[in-house]
Image 1 (cartoon, rainbow, N blue to C red):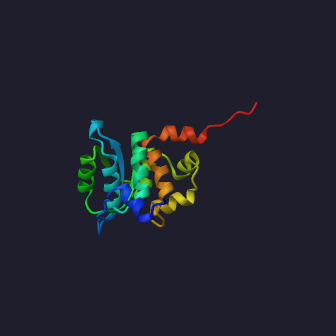
Image 2 (image 1 turned 90 degrees about the horizontal axis):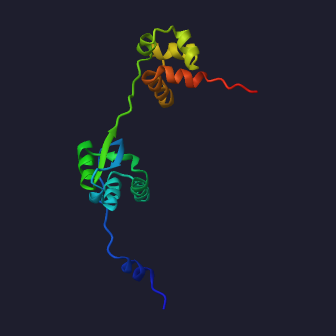
Image 3 (image 1 turned 60 degrees about the vertical axis):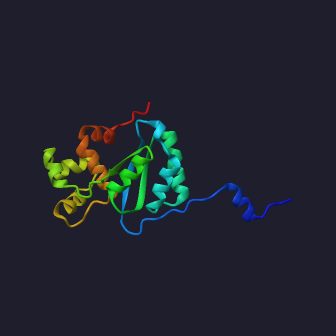
Length: 171
């Protein structure tokens, strides 16, 4: 005899409602399994993520990815307090570190630190001179991609130059 939908759900056992955070700001965290794997509670971790506005399916997949890859980047839409997220994740056996993207890049200071003119900097890293001028004078702000590229240049200028200027020889 076929079971009704209600009976099938009852066989699955009780479900737990997610008490969502009502206010906060978006934030991105890097999640890693804590040193003591025996403390890991992936279901509780998924609930803690869903509590901060992450859809339950995505939270479940993040917990599964954490088990497989040992590290996950989690974008949470509603973080009430960074310390509260870290404490909740720690209780689940997960280490949570807030990822703080550097929102501002001082392009002029970077260029001057490398002792390059605008033209030299632009040629070396494949940028437009006018774009650099706009960034340096505050007329425009670099977008997310440009900020990431500028941070890479700031952290490893020779490596970025080498990667950008690699020439393939066709034989």
